[in-house]
Length: 97
Image (tube, rainbow, N blue to C red; front, side, top):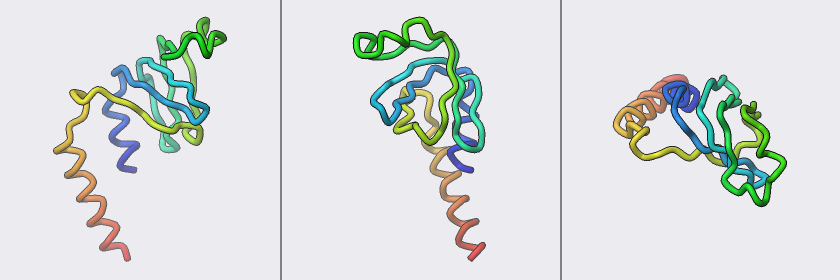
């Protein structure tokens, strides 16, 4: 829930999604769902020489289970807000036990 809420705040921003097969895709985040599936527009790949078949692709849907990392510029991350949300979620889970 925490990551889903966080990624929803990044809609419209440029993100880099690194997949488990080492493909890194840079694009504008259009949407994210509760399974952390991502939809990106205006994409490009970081290593075009290694993945030339991706040059003609302009948008994509990425299944959450194949994502290794999501890289963001530090300026896009409100660490205080993220820490506060993580603290609140931990307290909620502790009370639920």
